[in-house]
Image 1 (cartoon, rainbow, N blue to C red):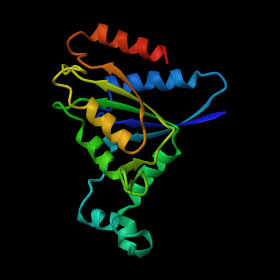
Image 2: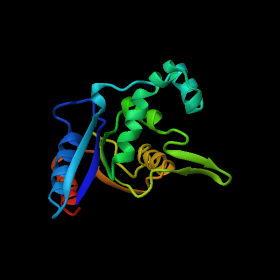
Image 3: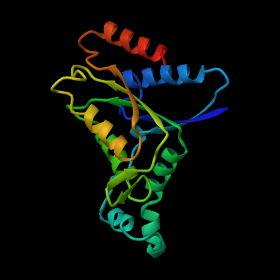
Image 4: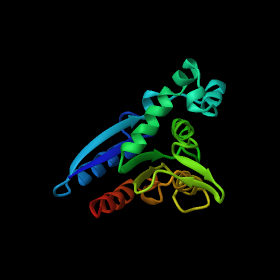
Length: 196
């Protein structure tokens, strides 16, 4: 049996990153499941991700069979990101908190993958997500902003966006406020990962 995992690194730090280190541990833990062959696709947002622009929006709102060659070209990167999500059974995200929000590159990734008729669709009763039967683990790291407090603006936002595209089985692994008590916060995160 195999399991396709999409790993998304949202930290702009390639080294000395708590979220990256914890994602490594999580992948190792998931790879240890008996009888499971894990295939990991990594999307490192520190390598760059395009922002949507006027051409992208025009292409996205044009029917596929009516798009020009340039419009198809403007959606290639987005189509690749959506394809990665579609193929994944499990999504693992390393998500630092930057200035009380998600990193700009992660917001850019969201803008590229939340697409009508691909990851959600409009119905008579409202929008419905199309990426069902997927699980997401989100490792949140921060220096001082604690999840679950009045300063936590990301957990509800990320939960809402993922649910909007159909991913409702979401587990947060908390390594927030690591700057306040590094050993305690990391020990708690390691224990959580070990129980998965």
